[in-house]
Length: 304
Length: 261
Image (cartoon, rainbow over all chains, first blue to last red):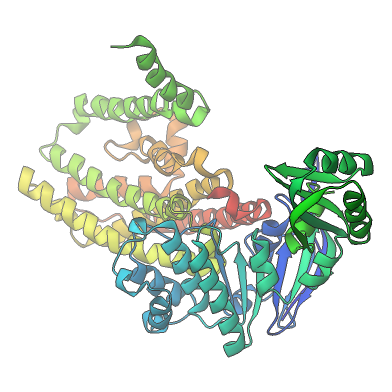
């Protein structure tokens, strides 16, 4: 559905800055592909190039086997977009906005197409309200409706759930999965909510400083982090536990009677044995496997 | 009254004003354009040449006609600015919309607004001053079309700057049009301008329209030649301004349209 090759965006001439550095990836039919990376890694720049609102310095973008730069209008008929970081004309009502956007996609019956989606997101009673009177969450839901009411084949979503309450965000994720099942559409998805990405995405591409540093399943990326979290509720011997952790060079965090140690899976038995020999007693023990969030923190340089 | 709070307010706007040359337009540009335009008009009104009984009609017709040009210009620029102000630019240009379709849509709206503006202005002038600006007869229509086309040209020139430099030059939407008024001989004949300004004046399509308008009001003759010169210049200017706008739009797309929101 989408094929990106050697895509590059370089800004400035005197002090060149490469925002996206020769990235290459494919988005398959019916796939939900996550695009992850710390701030400034090139996610939004990539999406802007995929939408044609930013011209790449070099590289190619093919949608449905056609060159995007030569068939922009024809391709965008089947591609749609939603982002928390853009808005819609706020002096227009919800209905007026959807009618206008419907026409931009060549539909004179935009509202008929949008009504079921407005109902799905609890926005039907807001159809005559001006966008300026909507909450941030309602605007985001309207953006989702705008992205899907034209029956796209590819949807690019730039942090679509960033301003939503957890329950609504969950509902949006559920909707995306439903749409994928129903229409076999392909979705490129960026988010800072790692649980959401892990739940939703079939595959994740990780960008750092404009380069793709990983392309794998979410669970494989999480597994690539060797550090587990050992959470202990200490009854007696907190000082001894801290002392052992320091001796072994294990990172830890203390909160009242609880200590969370970050260490490799194969180091856990030895550490527990050491505590037992020192007479440390604990009321509870929990070993947490690494998550996609741990992976994200690791590549962002915030976790060991 | 707390002096520090007063100074807080003062500096809040002072810093905005000195943040760029474009904010100094209120201090220098508009006074200069007004002095030029109304000063030249006053000079002409005082002259023997203007001692005709239809002077008010000439001035009022000039005013209404200039509104046609002005509206056309502002309509184009404001349409673009609305996408900036409402952070809709990326949404808008990530649809199948083509550049030519966007321009055609804006022009269509501008035509509708022209009819409303001119009708309203003419009624107000008639009610307040008992003057019929349609005295120029059917010549009004081609004149208005020609003025509107030049308005679009000015609008595309202003939009070329706005689409590249963004918010910091958004006052160009109003400024650039006003720059052409003194040279277009809206209220006075070209002959009262200095020689160097007459050269500029005769290169503008608007000048032929306003001279033609005065010719009709003076002696009832429709200056066909003036009309065709005006239309020909308009075609060249409009094509060049659209080409410039397209060029600047693509330059802006190089930097990313999202930066303008």
